[in-house]
Image 1 (tube, rainbow, N blue to C red):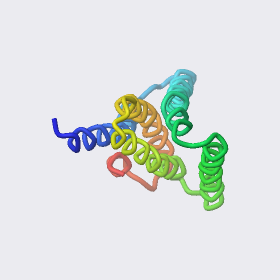
Image 2 (cartoon, rainbow, N blue to C red):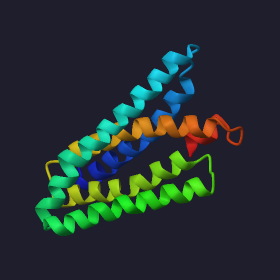
Image 3 (cartoon, rainbow, N blue to C red):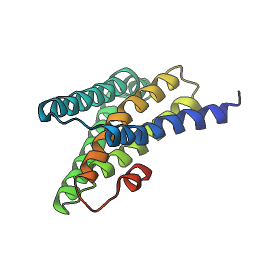
Image 4 (cartoon, rainbow, N blue to C red):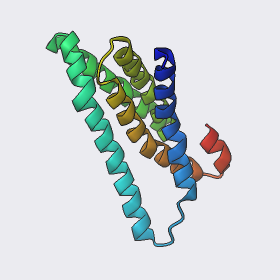
Length: 161
């Protein structure tokens, strides 16, 4: 199969996991509040674990292999500071789309890392694509629930976004 087609397919599937998470949130109808809370907590924990796995198993080892530890640490901390500033900004403007904005801005460095993994012929490229998809699923779920809690957006529009 053509390499470009493989890269596009892997990236598309990883990104579509966000919409799949939103569809699952749309379909989820649990009457018991305790079970609903536990489901939400479990999905959030799963997403955090997938994100941590992607960082620990793929991103940090690849970054350290190509950068000196000091510069890798500086870039890692710089990324954390950028996301913290984005979170502060979103909190100040009190938007109901903070989870959506965080999810979409998170996909930018993920896409760059995925493209770099495929470009360098890394054997971790498929693993990274799978981990990105696994952590995008709960992000889409959470973003849908956050946006759906306000009356500003209809479910189909949320899923499309």
